[in-house]
Length: 438
Ligand SMILES: *Cc1c(COP(=O)(O)O)cnc(C)c1O
Image (cartoon, rainbow, N blue to C red; front, side, top):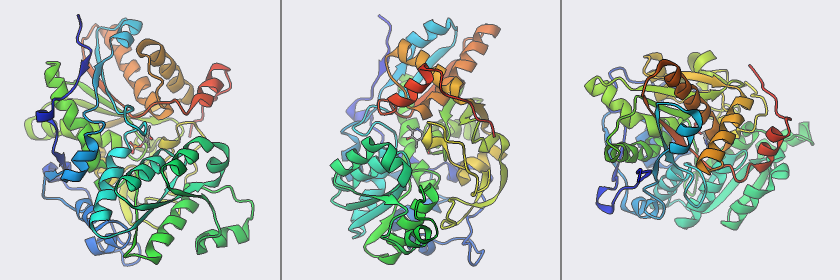
């Protein structure tokens, strides 16, 4: 019988995250404090983030960072996640390529975001913080944070973009089930929210309004309450490297090594998570794996963005980050892959892209859903609309392998399931989805 699933034993579990910056020959440019234009310090960052996360954010020296025992303990409820050989998809495509995917959808929250939420909440708890806050759009990050906060005995306040709060109630209800306070943004609970509502009482909200409110809450009680983020920042990608480190061992069990690693790309955390552990062999040992960031054609920061300093958020609250960006005021089209509607790429991936260690491909929305449908029927898993972009990019490569008669090993990250995105699939099936190009 063919071996399809690869799991790690208890004694093979990953106990350290990998910090690729320590191995990069050219380090990413420093982030700047927008007021002083000087490099940000741990002190600057720890006004809003947990101190340990702030330290990790600026760490350029240590390649390996111990995962705290308490976080390992929480990871052990759902990790290792399976690496699967997608025989069904290979057969459907009649390709000589070997296709593997790392399944990050199999945890209580349904996406990879929990890997960093647990770490961030643990550090907050350890540092004596009692409350955490964040923003969320569709709700994947908010849900992961709500559950992680509950697990470590913290109170969570999640500002959710008002239009999603009203139109997509399921994840909001689940956040509330985990005990989080979910506030539709803009709200009257902050100065930023009141100002927006005074100008426009019918404002639908945006990630920008929600970030402003969350950061205002955190900075009004800096000792008690910290802000958390689900992507973009270096420490978030660091926590996600557990994905690639496990995969590396699982690929050894499969006796293969990837020629190509593919991940969908919002702010870059799952991409860094699966790619960096393999990329270190390119940097240190001259391996030739290709790394592909699959981004939506409507929000193509890697292929069409400009490399420069920009804010990480619409509200101009974050440090200035050296990034590939479409501009922090860029308003992406309202595609279903909400987690990919982000204007820029994190500092590390941006530097690596500049050096040619990775490249981007742009996937139109309908192509992503068509890939998701094929994957669903050949592998039995309904993928998240974000993950569909990685699947579409993989299918393009598998077809090229067929044309060229090459047996490449392709690996992609399945970031989440799409069980709460059924209406998006319905629109695709009914032919109601359209493509947006920038
Ligand atoms: C948030 C999200 C993404 C994109 O975020 P990255 O930081 O780029 O990884 C991808 N897939 C799912 C399911 C998400 O929730």
